[in-house]
Length: 259
Image (cartoon, rainbow, N blue to C red; front, top):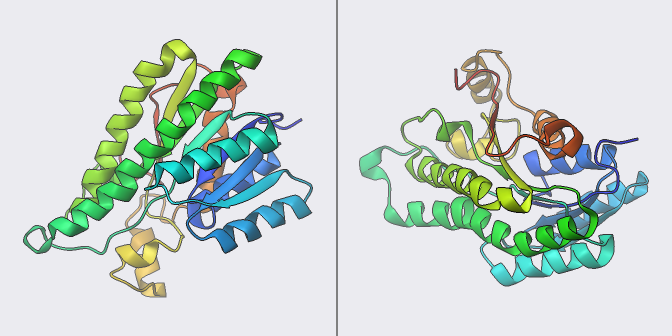
């Protein structure tokens, strides 16, 4: 028996990185998953891998800045899997470091459009379906937002990314209060820098072994966060038998970065 047996989830930004790790962890625990990503071809490849391993998965090219596209994702999830239990608002973009006086307003707008409004749009699209699911089967539904450790412990030169992720944290906590009467839990994952394609942005545009080692050594545990780390944490927060009393929880998955 898996911890998410019988549950259906949408994961945005699911074709790579932390999102792919969440999809893989959800599948191992029995969840049916809609792999939603701007890269539709890679999303389909991720879903096909899960189907080949005996899981239930569908894919859809989805832009989190487009509410209509997210509504289509929710509709597909309900059609194929019978409902929606978990919305994982994971899609995001990184940022190359820039000093404050060199930070452009257009860069901030793009960060907010994807990293804050993208989560906002995902939640708005999902809430009606989460309410329907809860009313039909009496089981708590949930929203999970991938935020960032930077929202808890700021760092310089990442102003757009950090400000947008701080807004996503506010969204998570406020929604937790608003949706509690509906028995919809809202929690957040707060990873530190990870072994994902986004690391190239934080390294200034290209990864190298030197950069990876420097990032890892800056974390107390001395290693980068992996997609598997985030996937395991996502399963925990999404499992009603384990995290049924948790809402508004900011869970650092950060190798000690935010201490």
